[in-house]
Length: 280
Image 1: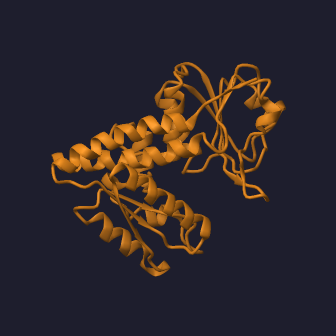
Image 2: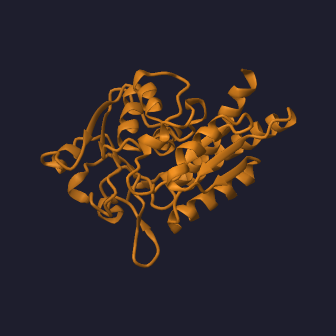
């Protein structure tokens, strides 16, 4: 039976660090502040933003939410980026029709781009600029691997999914750790043959239980980024966890794996941005 990689435990350690750093900033008269643009009535997006607000409140971070109209998103993000006492800015998806995250993300100051939405942030990540904020979900993949002391240098990491939110930045982060990285997608020929060669498999394709037993080999470490809703109100990952349980070495559960770590890293990024602003 595979070992579960406990994202909740990892997230708790990050939140403890964030709380201590927030208290230090507060003692200096600085309240770390996250501003979220929520340009949608989508209930799942609203639920996620409320959960971020609750998580921020618990660690002492102020969280502001704006609800701009489609025509006002860019101006809202420009204003928030230019507000001195706002340290982190993000735009929640889904976006109104006709808009892309790259277009609106370009209006977030890179120094405050705590979820790596600005295309410039992705470019800086590719260039290896040390103080760049990666998309938090992609960063959570690496955070879990580091916390579990999984060796990366020289290992073969396969990323299934090529989005700019998870797949591409996760690949860049793995490359920076000297892993050999293969990025797969919908046109990859014989996908199971490719993924079976992985020491580390990152599933970020957005299709429930797509990757079954034929996609893995003994000893693989699986990071399942998928959060696919089920008819009964639950969540399942992109990996069929039951099907691979007797083969892989370890796997992140869904829920309770990548998700909690993503939220904790967003909060840490806000504190890091506030600390940097205090020294400028």
